[in-house]
Amino acid sequence: MTLDEGIAQLGLTLPAEAITRLEVFLALLEKWNRVHNLTAHRTREAMIVHHLLDALAALPTLALRHGRGARIADVGSGAGVPGLVLAMARPDWRIVSIEARGKKVAFQRQAAIELKLANVEILGARVEQVDARCDAAISRAFSALDAYVRLAGHLAGRLWAMKGVYPAEEVARLPAPWRLESWRALSVPGMAAPRCLLELTKACTSSP
Image: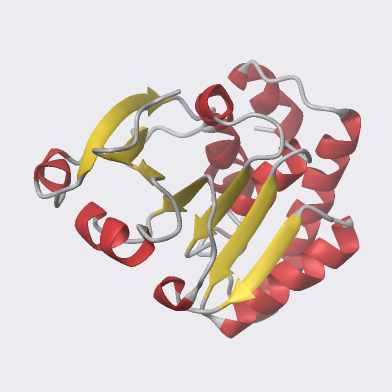
């Protein structure tokens, strides 16, 4: 699976500059991973599928809710996924990348410099210590949903969660005033495992 093949299978049309940046990001991730163990995925194809395409699969749904100038936080962003990937695909969005682990923060900052990502702010901190107001936040394998809304709910009234199998038990444990607004299954090219994207909102927050 190449990046171009995956993007085509997702039905996305990205600017040539975005694809070039994604390729450079992938090369940086491969280089740093050999020394710093940023991700468990070792091969180039696995990184394309589990990091780049997984993040890009959420893009169409996110774009339905968020237009130009949207400020979106990536909570527990790890090596910059999905936040930096979304920043490359949507340079009109402002991404606040929040990660507590130093080596992953260092990688993100170096990647942002080399990729000239002017729309990214990288914060080396625990999310509960971050004082920032955003239009939304997104996380990928950060925590159970009840912990997610408790730790990151101060950032925005809309939280997105990328998960594997639909987490029915976690949804049932969502504390008020949070609720499941919507969810959809994601089809990630080259990935056999199920993926889904959940949209969580506060009861007082209506959908646009």
